[in-house]
Length: 84
Image (cartoon, rainbow, N blue to C red; front, top):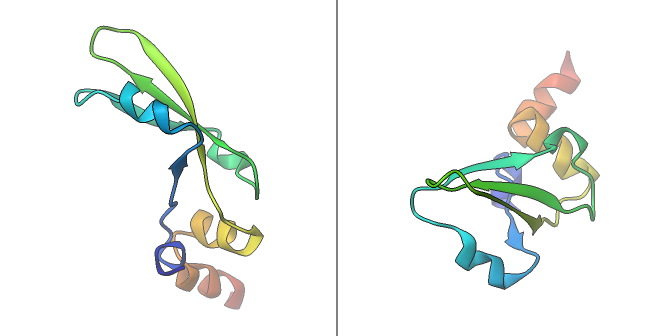
């Protein structure tokens, strides 16, 4: 919960075997974060040095309130937004 309150998105691999697809020189992009919702996986694009790409799925455990914290940057930022 501390990571979540700080606006960090903790993710785990939907398929642990996908860990081996990540290469040290990859550029990693998280896709469609604007549509983040409870129970929905996050797509992660791995752009490899050779130009090839892989898309893997990651899991999160955020609820609706925690997603608001994430989108605001932290729980404190969200509280400040609500006070305005």
